[in-house]
Amino acid sequence: IRCQSPGVDKTKTKRNLFDNASNLLTNLLAGGNLKNMPVAEGAVTDLFDRPLFYSLYDWFLEHGSVYKLAFGPKSFVVVSDPIVARYILRENAFAYDKGVLAEILEPIMGKGLIPADLDTWKQRRKVITPGFHALFIEAMVRVFTKCSERTVLKLEERIEKGDRSDKSTIVNLEEEFSNLALDIIGLGVFNFDFDSVNKESPVIKAVYGTLFEAEHRSTFYIPYWNLPLTQWIVPRQRKFRSDLKVINDCLDNLIKNAKETRQEDDVEKLQQRDYSSLKDASLLRFLVDMRGADVDDRQLRDDLMTMLIAGHETTAAVLTWSIFLLAQNPTKMRKAQAEIDDVLDDGAITADKLKKLEYIRLIIVESLRLYPQPPLLIRRSLRPDKLPGGYNGANEGYEIPAGTDIFLSIYNLHRSPYFWNKPNEFEPERFTVPKMDENIEGWAGFDPARSPGAMYPNEIIADFAFLPFGGGPRKCVGDQFALLESTVALAMLLQKFDVELRGSPDEVEMVTGATIHTKDGLWCRLKKRT
Ligand code: HEM
Image (cartoon, rainbow, N blue to C red; front, top):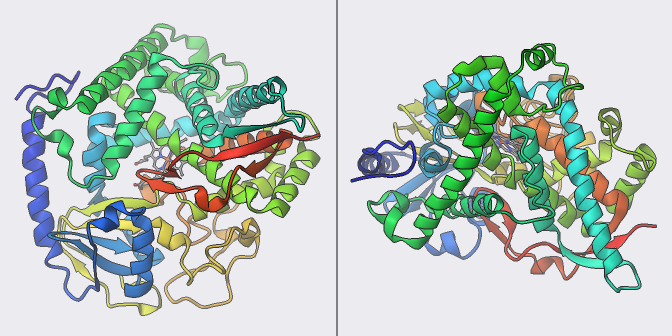
């Protein structure tokens, strides 16, 4: 079996088939072994009729915070419990890998941080984390502002060119946010201006093609794409391979260029974290400059590709759902705009002003609570383990065999009636008065003192009942980047426009893969503020 994908081991297709067969077998054995665990029987229609996380929520209310979900011979353990989540993500993190998720993402991200094996991950995480230094994020505010300005200008022009006397326009904001997030990630991570807000190019098309395929694969729990010959026969697999090649060639060129233009001056500035006078403050510059010419190009490319995918749709989704929620709550929209007018006073956003945009920051985290991206984290146990008993002594703690596939349902945790007042309501203010009235055994409650200086509520403050960026050693590396980026973009949009949904909120249907997004776009009426 020949595999022509650039840089991919020729024996890989064979090995993947073997791995998949043995994983399935291990899973069957594991699934049959979860004694005493409540069981939810899923019908295949549960996978297709509506987003899976809805059914997982109903079963959580019915069966409790740890249950087994059986789809025929295949089974998953579904966890909606902060104590068990804390154990899997932090306390015993290295006894689990990414299981199905790694199988889906490895053909795209190679040995990037998300699917990487443990040894590669340990080495790369150590190198990449310092790149997201607080001063780098601060320097990125310029990029966030420049890109958001382009989006605002484009929308203003649309209104000017239109013929509506009320100075409004109808626009699919989800699409605009997707372009904006792509431009930001391109400039911030590898200093490449996609300018997708204003134009289409073969690289942009290839990025969207690849994202579409990644999304499609993440809704399939059997990796059909590893079957021999499909890469050559099935048109969408052929297209995927050619899209991947376009992006890889682009990334290879950027890496080559970064290596060739390495200058000792810049290295010194980076060592002193002096981003202010650097022309290129991107993460790629940091990774190349700080490690010299010895960086492995293939690994660098996998790292960049991972960040491109991990940081793009996620951020676009946060912005989309923030607007969806605000548009249904005009009083909160006005409160947000009053804060923006007061803090920005018609001027530009700076790092200092961002600190004062407190309500906008709470809107972003509340949007992540209601629509977590991704709604599920996926793990597979590498060896037999015993899960802790859960809050309020829910159970004795279940034994799980090696090879158990686990869904940590962030959606369930974030909407759990045990940890949140009115869990399904949009209430950004809730983070300033968290639920502290009940003593929930095993859970430490909300306490901002556990994370001093944090600009945004996080999993430490909420003792794993709130996991917008995961937790433990594999927590998102781009969390602060994404939060500030979303705050800047949302503030700049609301500074200039009033936003209403074009139709009823019920018409906005959801679909989900890696992220929760709309089926047909978020169509809004944008009106220029006077
Ligand atoms: C991991 C969410 C933006 C890069 C994760 C994880 C979550 C997450 C939940 C943990 C996955 C797991 O444990 O299985 C988000 C959300 C974002 C966002 C909601 C936007 C609002 C970004 C950005 C970047 C990024 C902007 C890079 C520039 C990564 C990487 C990992 C990761 C590299 C893997 C970390 C590791 O395994 O060591 N993200 N992310 N993310 N994210 Fe993000």
